[in-house]
Structures are given as structure tokens and as C-alpha cells.
Length: 424
Ligand code: HGY
Ligand code: MN
Ligand code: MN
Image (cartoon, rainbow, N blue to C red; front, side, top):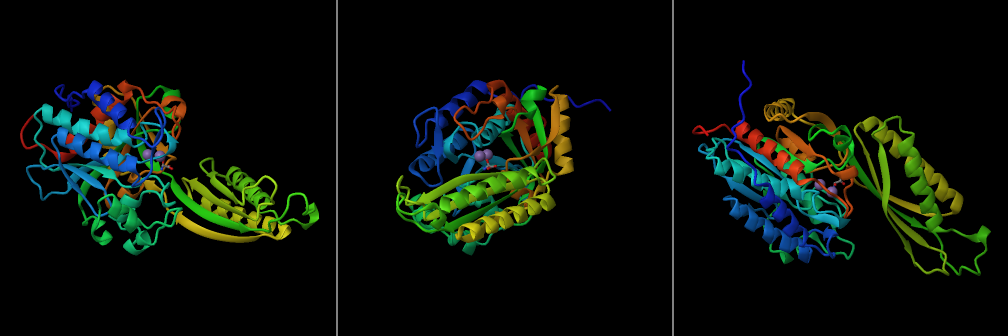
């Protein structure tokens, strides 16, 4: 059977997409080229306004749910059918780049605009989601919007979240203009026929292999924990070494144990990071009496992640016992990995070969909202290369040509999955 020819009329406006990525990058709590957009900050609220406008300019209708997930929809000729979804996030951790998440929101708007310009008439509706709080920065828990949509956390658990200054989710979402019961964020069963997220790889594989498109078969399972270590403070001159219960040094041993356990887990995909480490009182001539750490531990496999965690906890207990420091340990989240849907992966693969684009099936080591969308819909992700694999840093970069190819593959894939009312 001959390979169907992709319709040449589906043409992505690469310059326009690039311009919108650059415009959105200027909406930040940090001076350019650094991007910081923490959930419900002033910059996040302005970015949401930008996203609403970009969705409308792409000819999509916009609705928002009580936690601020934004849904941009193109109603199909059979609106009762489960929709074909796409989307990603626009919130950004401190000192981030301009492509993480943004490519998947603005790129999806452009994919749908390209289909509209080509005269495509979808049977199933097409819907792009800008997910609230994919990053964990505000509350320590990432993917808040997609977790609630997938029903993997309760409204009560979300309502109990506090930021570093003790502010609640309800307070912050109300200040950003959102209200209503969080229970209603949960998607009705079968809302999406399929979900495909476009994202930069946030790793070096595609660039090293010179392959323009990655197709995600597996998303590693993230987990994170918070630890407070209670030692004893005192004068840096007066407290002699044998009498010390230095919380920072106990925390330093924990951080080294995280690295050791991740390296020794037996799986190359185990990664452990202590990205937050705060001490009190933070005076150069005072012995730290308390340390607060957050541990990020991920793996494509659950058994080796569990092994690494057990190792970390026992090393931490030994270090604290030896130093006379008390440890409080709390799990923030421990999520299983997710599998890409084989049929959706195959559809993307076919589209790539019809477009003459090489593609590679791969694991995502970063987590994404797709990790939770995979619980409620056949899901995969389209990756594009990013320079040196850099991400979560201002030097993050994706070439305009790669971004355009990703949006083009997304457009053709969504069109194929949506079916069409009339020919192109
Ligand atoms: O941390 C992650 O993997 C994602 O970028 N939030
Ligand atoms: Mn990120
Ligand atoms: Mn992301």
C-alpha cells in the first residue's frame, strides 16, 4: 500500500511561532535572557493573559478551570466524540530558559492554526491545554493541574498545600482570578481520544544522533522528599568540635548519600538531586542548628528507585545518630513511570516518515504533564533537540527549524487522529 502523502498545505508559520516564543520569554520575574515564571506570580498571571490572546489569535475558544488550566479548543463536526488533545506548560522555575513547556503550548496553537489555514475540518475536536503548575517551585509539587485533571491527587490534598510563606493554594489562585471547587478540575472519563505533548528533549540524545524528532515511549517516575534536620546551634568560637551537633554537616552527608545511592542503584536511569538546601541561622560565626533539604529521586524503574531511597534513608539515619541530630522525613510525591501508547507512538512515527523526518523512540527522564495524562488517555510526546541537552538554565536553546518540524509533526498527527469532515 503506498505511503499516504502528507498534505503540503499544512505549513507551519515558523517566523510567527518564533516571534511568539520570544515575546512570551520577556514576561518574566528575571531580566532577559533569564526566564522565571513561578505559579500565580505577577509574571505567571501576565503570561496567562498572553496565552489566552495567542489562543484566540489562533482561532480557538478559551475556557479555564478552577485551578487555572487553560483549554483552547477547536470544536469538531462531532463535538460529542472524545477530543484529540495536546499542550504543555508556561510556568518556569527560577533561572530557566524560554523553551521548556512554551514550545508545547505555542507550538500546538501554531499546529492548529496551520490546519485551519490548510482548510482542515476536524471530526473530533482539537484541544490544547496550558497546564497549571507543571513546575514544583511554588508548592514543592509539580504537575498540579494535570494531577487534578487525572484525579491522581484529591482536592483536599491540593488545598492543604502551602508555599514557603505559608500562603495556601486557595489564596493564591483567588488572587490570580480563579475560584470554584477543585473537584471539578477532574476530567470526565474518556475526555481525550489521545494526547500528544510537544516538548524540548531536555537531554542530549537527539542532538548527538542528529535526529530531529523523538517519540516518547516511557516517562521516568519522579519522586521527591523533604527532610528537616534539627541539630544544636551555638557560637562558632565557643562550641568545641566534639560537642557539636551541626545540622548542615548532617545534611551534607545526606546529600552525598543521595549521590552515592543513585550511582549504586543498578539502573543507569536512577538520578538523585538535592536542589534545595537551606540552613539556619545562616550566620558565618554560628553553628547551623537546622537544615532543610528537598531530595528529587527519579528512575525509569520502581525497584531500583526504591532501593536507592532505602539506601538514602538508612545512610541519613546513621549520619544523624552519629552527630546527635534529629531527622524529620516526609514524602512529597512518589509517582510511577508512564508508558507511551503504542498506537499513538506508531501514528507519530508514520507521520515522521511521510514527512521525511527521522525519528527515535526514547525515554523521557524529565517528567511532564503527559505523565499524568497517560493515566486518562492514550498519550505520547514529540521531542525536539535542544542544544547540549541544556534545560532549566537560561542557555536553553532549540533551533527554529526543529521547533517548526515538531509543530508540523504535531499538526499532521492531530489531524490524522481527529479524522476530517471534508477533504483538505
Ligand atoms: O522536573 C522536571 O522534570 C520538569 O521539568 N518539571
Ligand atoms: Mn521544567
Ligand atoms: Mn517542561
